[in-house]
Image (tube, rainbow, N blue to C red):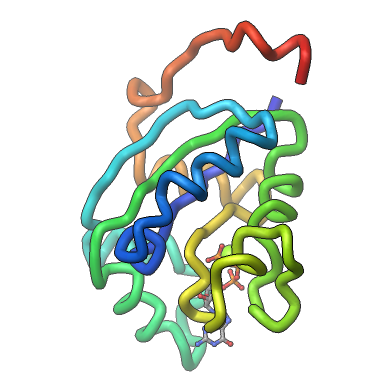
Length: 147
Ligand code: GTP
Ligand code: MG
C-alpha cells in the first residue's frame, strides 16, 4: 500500500472545487488518511517546491501556492502515486485529457487546481512538510475488499 500527498491549490479553493475534487478521488476508491485546510507559509512553500528552485517560474509558483488557503491531504492506495496523477491529468493543460481533474476544470497551466506527489521519495518528503505522523489516521474501510 502506498501513500501520496495531494493538495487542492488556492485556485481550486477559490473556485469552490474542493468537494468535487475530493469526490473524484473518493470515486476512484482511494482512501483518505488526513486532511487539513490551511494557509501555507513562504518557507513551507519553498520546501514543497524545492525541486523547482532556480527555475524561472519558481517565484511565481511560491507566490501562487501561498496566495490563499489550500486543502492539504494524504491518500492511500495501491500504486496511488501513479494512479492519482492519472486522475489529476497532465501538468500542461493542453495535454490534460477530458475526464481528468485538470482536463475538465482547468484552462491555464499554472492554475491547475491540484498537486500530486510524483515519486515515493517526494511523497514522503511532502507529507512530512505538511503533517505530523499522529495526524495520519489509521482505519479500515469496509468497502476495501470490493475496490
Ligand atoms: P504539481 O502536482 O503541482 O507538482 O504539478 P506537476 O507535478 O504536474 O508539475 P511540476 O511538478 O513539473 O510543476 C509544478 C507546478 O509548477 C505545476 O503544477 C505548474 O503549476 C507549475 N509549472 C510547471 N511548469 C511550469 C512552467 O513551465 N511555467 C509555469 N508558469 N508554471 C509551471
Ligand atoms: Mg510536481
